[in-house]
Length: 320
Image 1 (tube, one colour):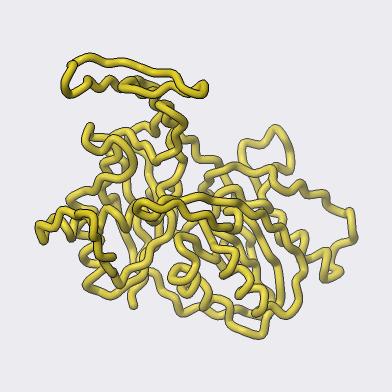
Image 2 (cartoon, one colour):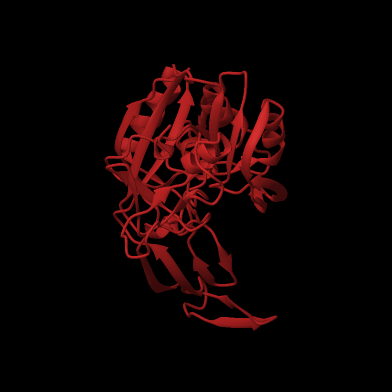
């Protein structure tokens, strides 16, 4: 299987579903399910299959991560809300990483309390420059969308249980021009289909019929997965939606845990007409541990098994 880092740009405002009544505020990332859904829609449209009540699941030999904000120059995925990022001095316009301090303290190279770090003080989205971390700002657009009733040709609203419903939607979307990055693993044919489709452009999220959520390919590059650790020490960063079940599998591979900062989220997702509740590891969670295995193998395996997330091993930001 081949492995790509893919960058896309939203050419139109983007609304990834997060709504209450008629108020829509977009999430700040694109779930892997939205990308795969758009690709499946392309296949069905090409085959002139338009759905129906008895829908057969379309299988694809393709796995992608969630897509988070990035820059055109970044060469890797950067885990959002990485817990080890902080500012050494409040006046600095950049952030640094504290994982190396944790490791050196554990190894006795630094005394306990010699250097103070403050966890969970970093930016949500970020990029690297000269070894430092800088925040990525996401701009949003607020607007209203009016839809006329098909028969009466008027717009109206109703209030029920303190929620407004009707034909006037209040929208807070992500403005055009933002770059999102994700990784994709699959056969050569499936990855070629992904790239060709993104060159043409896909629609994701809400209000697609009004032109919202149009993504196009910015660039892509192949990832070489032949990595080996210099020793038995690893830093595991959790990117995107890694399932709790898969997290438990990973814990069984670790020999000794030196540091752990794990958050757990409860997530509801719509699978066709059925709501499913599951638990995921919060993006930006970190484990520092020793293992006899080559944990770099998880960078590929996790994309296939975790359902939109990825385990990033020894990210360059940690300076190992």
